[in-house]
Image (cartoon, rainbow, N blue to C red; front, side, top):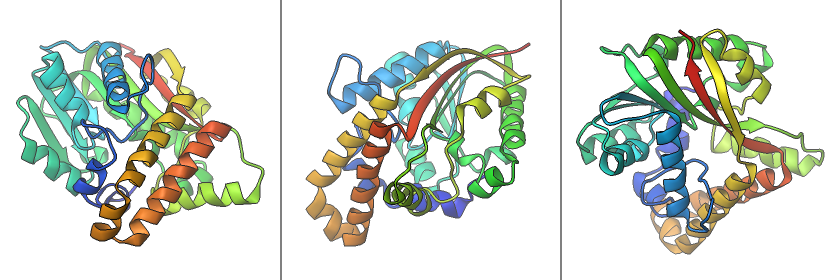
Length: 282
């Protein structure tokens, strides 16, 4: 599992920094560009997709594992009428942001999922962009990732009621780059922007869900993540002067390099994006 220090590197630069180039809901994950070229609408498309796929209704208790700045919970509460939402985050900055907003019906817990014990069970689960933080690169190299992923799915099963649906989104490994500079750029982005994280192989996820969850749907959104990254990069560049002044040249240049690299790796198929719809096995 990524440490709190790793998560701080990734998400605690500054809430204001990310608000300059993310969408209005502050969603730092792949959008769904179906019928639109607008990032805000594409993120709404994605949030709506997960609301429907997790079978969320106003009376259900909803868990968001790795809730980020709470945008999904805000959307479910304010736009879809959900009344009982709980998020987990290991980012202090994100936790503070969610607490300060105080969206009705939204609660947030600070800490690792490994230590989480809900007082009541949940009826729907969503987790977007957190799965990449479950196993470290060292654990993957040591062959421990399948066990760690399966333990994660076991825990979520124990937190839920019979009949629960679970919407899961993760970047996944795809083709292996052959050019040395592309391998170097891919490794740089992981170690500099996302230390402690690693993109799982899809076949490992499909194996790890058993015997707790059944895969009902699997969608890949590689091209959508290339477009999302390009939209973020455009927003970053529009705010270059502000970012350089407030957070320094290094921050702007690192994120410009990282987001540009994301566009390339998704366009070339070195990484992809998986959305899974899981049903609890009872």
